Image (cartoon, rainbow, N blue to C red; front, side, top):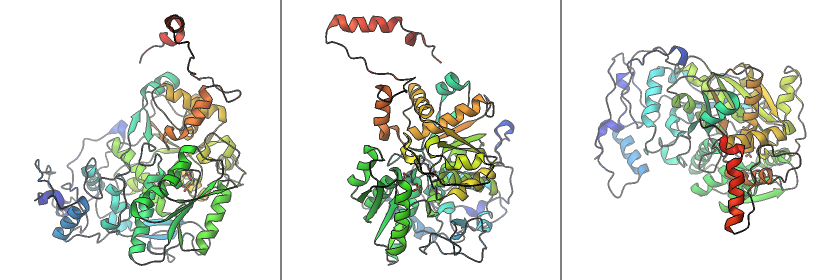
Length: 538
Ligand SMILES: Cc1ncc(COP(=O)(O)O)c(C=O)c1O
Ligand SMILES: N[C@@H](CCOP(=O)(O)O)C(=O)O
């Protein structure tokens, strides 16, 4: 038997709130007594008390699960032993910018993507219930779940289940244990190119399907799984995509045995991205239009057929994506970075980051939020133009072709969410030309990364803001890397081989050499005399 203390929540040992948030890295307080006994397992059935106990260490030796039991069975057994479900925490759809108590609201089991007035929706949590627990409690609970395989908390998303979909039965969750992506200290890139010493890259693309979309898709597909078990008519799940949403949707649907349908703009996504839904068995429609055209079509189709919409217009997705922000704070031991830079396209993610940071501040895990920067490709820059107009006039654009193909979007569905996030975080919008984003990608790769062009867009924003002095040399800055570089090898190959006219400042083409000793020696002698060898180490 597994020791019950590992599984049973110890809500009875809560301290009264509030405690001091320990979040300003320049002025960090000594960690105060952790207010609860960490439990990896279900944290539901809270009962508040004013007793304060020091944390107890988890038992050193756990007995193994018995052979017939899988991790879901194990989690179920412990839930039934502790009698716990998700009592107390709840969430609902409300019109964007309305509170939990809004007169217009919908259950998360409703199939609804727009408010009555046609505006965006948002998932709102019952903050009163969540704030019965103080920041120290939540920090401790989330920290206790990292690096484990307990279902479903082994996922970086579901380790924050109470803040995501509190009421879903863990048995309905479809998860690849996504999240928990590495936060890379970009030491050499920071020093060499930016004179920065505290630059970090959050590698959200080092993930199950190679992009941050997994974080949102686990939530959306889990909810669809639940709806289908409730006998709701959902015959499949559909999305329009520039490549990453479709990859994530098809993988999670395939894992759950749910049909998926993806609308892709013909010849506008990378081969690696195209093959993902094909391999995962989705119905792939290659449509002779751009992403905005596909988006329009999928909205029409999903209002006509019982196909569930998986784009970020569906606010469920953002509940998963916001956990990347919480994870960044957690990885910094709940210290708040100064800046977070996110590449933007359909603009759900910038709002998801804002939401995650704000929730941490509102619930007392930290005492402030970082300044957000949204970075766009100059060829697809409606947000940038809007920002530059002083938020006066939004005009959709026809997005031009860009190497950052996943953000080739001219009419972003989450424009209002993005503006809200930026206005409330002293945010900035920057843009990157094709040459700038490709050069930034090559520079980053030359320091040991292997990033996607969209991360090149975000790095360009950083380079510009450093140059203008807006971001200082010691500012703790996080660049969000949104997809894996291996999905974009064609553009890297073209850059390095000189196939892109007018580009290649940092190209490193392979040297073709005859297969004999003399020829190889000639090349190496030249190399040994070159500047490349005299580059300083760190
Ligand atoms: C790799 C990549 N980066 C950035 C983005 C932008 O995210 P969002 O559409 O949420 O702004 C997307 C998708 O749009 C993407 O696929
Ligand atoms: N880059 C996205 C575009 C669609 O964004 P979504 O977040 O609204 O699904 C993609 O990969 O398809």
